[in-house]
Image (tube, rainbow, N blue to C red):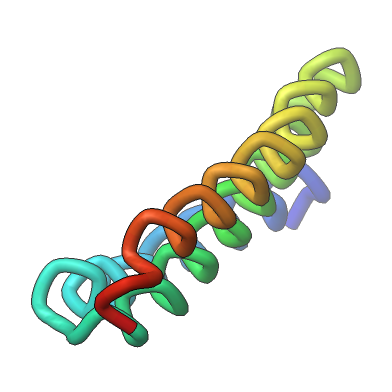
Length: 86
């Protein structure tokens, strides 16, 4: 197996791991939804980094790094908004 194929397979497996977290995000209580949101955002960042490595495009590593910072802030805003119900 080549290195790019391994990174591509790892990205697909991680995308499949996001499905149960999406169910929890939609159907779980609010505290579980916060945890599921943070999990999904961290997995999305890792998937984008794996895909950038799989396609051998180092210039595309900027997106996961920027997205990690922005989604962390988005998670804090999400928690702040639903704070009254937690």
